[in-house]
Image (cartoon, rainbow, N blue to C red; front, side, top):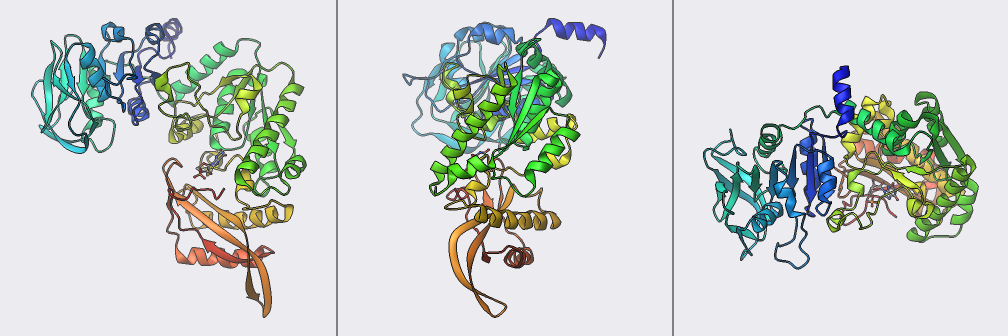
Length: 525
Ligand code: XMP
């Protein structure tokens, strides 16, 4: 980067020239932001109620108004400051976004007799800027109730479906709108439409990439924390918290301390290997706390899954607080929250609404009164892996399967005892080893063992046995929200079964879980 360029970047906001997506609560909002980033353009999602000044401060190249489930006539219909339409920046309204801007600019929106949902065919008119270069007929993905019967003055129809004005634009005011979803894969050439908007119409800055994300995030964190501030991070060794910690470590160095708590519910050798990896390979300042005894004490006799989670969460907070206290003055807490963890649609209600963040153990930020640093909160898991790779993190961390915060506690169904934990640990180690050997570890979302509280009769070496059953769970999933059970090869299942029964004392039966999510969740508890 040249000096001139550096000076220029320093004078402008870090993300100038990107795209701001204003969220009206649409189910695909995050996809819009992601498609934009795929063009190497920075994009951020803000609640539609964000004050105009905040939007302007980002100096975006253009704005997208997202879809949303509401009708513009609903009493609580989400709105944004109508002055966004006068900012002079190019605007693309998608579905609800189109209806809202049509309504604002004195066009006419009617409640439809029936919802148009699913595939439809778009007829493209000549001379459109948004739909330039596209075939005359396209399959698109529609999802709207209201529809537009009259465009605002200055607009012209540039695309129609059988029963709707599907695309319109007013190039003079630089406002574009579609009644369908260009961001979903089912819309043919949807990405080209977005490219037309982002690259040709907005001429957005195309320097966003993993490296610039890292540089800008590090700058942002430094600016926020200041010269003296200290941060603490609860590290789990998973991808998200490790990438978040490494980013903050770049910004703050020794002023970030990571804490890794052994809750006695980790997998075999996990505590020691993770500590070594994080300290030696990543150079993080890391405190390891062995708290396995108090955790097991708290869990003694507890069978109810929610009670287990609650107790683990509460104790974790206590231990984490103690450690943070020992460090002295700490004002910030780093968390590896990702976009899918941020509850959708909440942002529609505006910045004042509490956004529930997902953390490994419940309640951490609320109780600790620390300011949150969440450098990954706008990213998807695969984007986080790309960032992690750019940061030089080992593949062994980046490709790790998810592991729940409450650990093996939710994989020992029923009461947790040291003996049962040892059984599930033994079975889990075999599952991981065999799945890796079969070349499936990176292809599966998760594969693990669950210890059931069921004993059954068996026969081993002419002797009667009366042992526990282990269930094997292996699933494919995009994001953990839904999952399909994996069709593992029969030979692999056979090997898993034989090894578990032979090598894990106390287990004499293995079953394979063929439930998908829904209705089953991925974890058993
Ligand atoms: P379920 O079991 O709800 O899990 O289908 C979905 C995904 O989330 C993981 N999981 C957790 N992760 N803290 C976490 O960090 C938790 O309390 C937790 N519970 C479940 C689970 O492993 C799966 O990938």
